[in-house]
Amino acid sequence: MENETVTDAMWAEYKADMEKAGKRDGKNAAEWATQDLWGGRTTRGEKETAQRFLDGIEECDPEIMDLIPHLDLSGQWANGVTEEDVLANCDVDVEGTDPEDLEELIEAYRDAYDGAALEEIERSARAFLDD
Figure 1 (cartoon, one colour):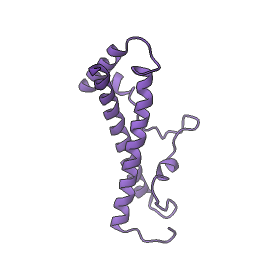
Figure 2 (cartoon, rainbow, N blue to C red):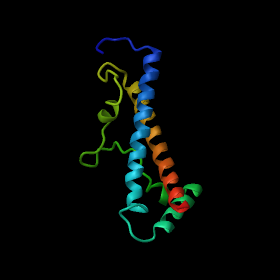
Figure 3 (cartoon, rainbow, N blue to C red):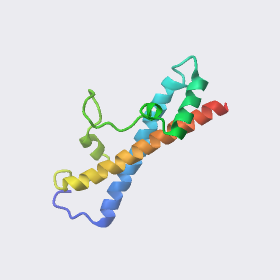
Figure 4 (cartoon, rainbow, N blue to C red):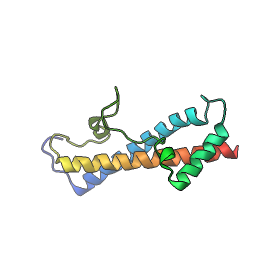
């Protein structure tokens, strides 16, 4: 895509790609987390934990909210996701794009990731308690 002019339609497609990828990845991260909370890798206190998460989400309890997966681009973890990994979800020319525009794409991914993770944790907890 070298030296290609990015149209509004292309930019909208890039953002849509980032949002789609963020939702997918956030949901996947939450699905993994629930296995340790009330899923197949835990054997006691699952119902209490699920209810505690629902209550904590409702009350925006920071202790609970901090346990919900969120996008971490800090680089503090080996094999952690990087900005470059995130930007690979769309066909943007990273080298030829303004850094502020790239940040807009990363934020679209982050918002979708964090929102999908929260939604999946809440959905999973409700489904677990309804069984």
